[in-house]
Length: 100
Ligand code: FES
Image 1 (cartoon, rainbow, N blue to C red):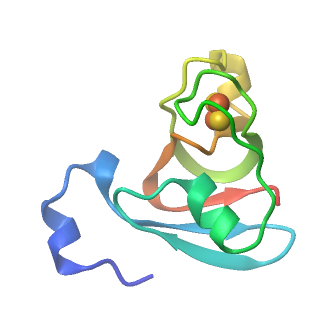
Image 2: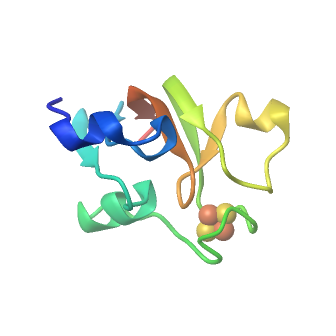
């Protein structure tokens, strides 16, 4: 994935990353300011959302590879080891793989 030069100046939590969908083999860029839920919905992948603030758990999805930057308040640490709230989480690395 090509990360724009201006992204190098952004804090790690706000940098662009690539969302990899393990089952469909799709790769979707997530830009700063976009949520994974928005990107998935724009790609035609059904992700239910409600609060869009990491509170309700509606959007929780299993992740399989990468290093999520969890920003929710609905998952326990144990749950975060396997699942991520795609409405608010980002990635600490260049890619994050979801079980979709
Ligand atoms: Fe509520 Fe994501 S939509 S936690």
